[in-house]
Length: 276
Image 1 (tube, rainbow, N blue to C red):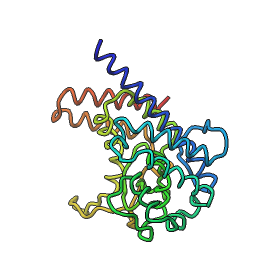
Image 2: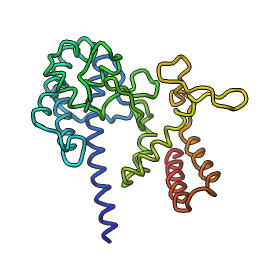
Image 3: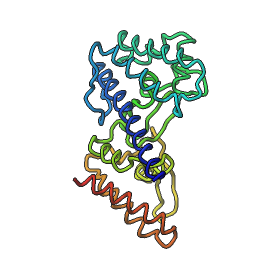
Image 4: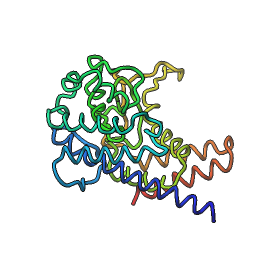
């Protein structure tokens, strides 16, 4: 009974956080679309009323608060100042065209204002605007959960950093919904393992072999031969789950039976949801 209650509590907590995530993604998708940019593909329609700038600051502040207990901002210092400081920058960016010309806007900020952005995104070094890509700059003006893969290369840049996400801003809505349902109540570590496995096609597509099968080289983001298979209109997420099941069958003699059964249960569940 205690295990069941703990699992139910985890599912409720995850559900509440996902609602907050979706709210932020929805509002900031509206912000980006108003600036002539693409927002979060899987974001629901925003339920916010009133001026868009005010809706964005409200969504950010609610999301920030949700991250104060056991989340991204659990140990941040001067939390209220950080919360309100970034709210002011969001409002200004929306009012002053910062989401259309993010490099120009970020370049106009004072050292103190750039420090707020640095702390929100947990950047190790002060921000050097001139060294950043457009995507890297734009994402500094978005809450972390609402950041976008602007150039559809499968990498989400924030400042000088680059990261892999699944789902990301370009994941089809039905795929993102299936993923959330399949991972509901799953411990973070287990979910991250499956996320990495889901991203393997992006990683393996950029490993190149010689004609004899030996390793040649690995393409890096920005290289002319970098590939993002997820951007292919014909890419099948259902086939990707079947590939995972096939790999489990191949690996069965080398892994524990528990690992095999958990993997089969998850990928079968996700495959069924994707094929509905």
